[in-house]
Image (cartoon, rainbow, N blue to C red):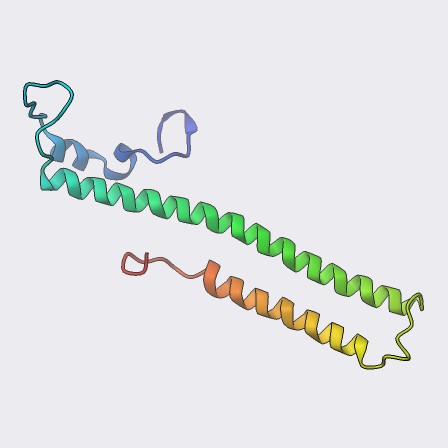
Length: 132
């Protein structure tokens, strides 16, 4: 990675000596602010770097979404535990509504399983260059 322990990607980190070989000696058009048209090798290296930077950002956001989904799953499980606890200590009585407690528990369990399935399928698939 780059100096100083930074986690930011730099072109030299990714492309190594290929960047120097492709850049060669810059050709100036007399104006010190602008280069003459970049070569295909330079464009190719910039595209590779942009792709790698995009993957880095993608995986960073994937991590954020993973934590958000873990939080939602924790809330759903805690709700189910709290509901069972309240019924178990006879604080809540659902004898008049026999159907309510099983429906709530099944619905909550289905949400947990569905969210876990979604997380596994979307967050943990591999990115290949043709699917990026």
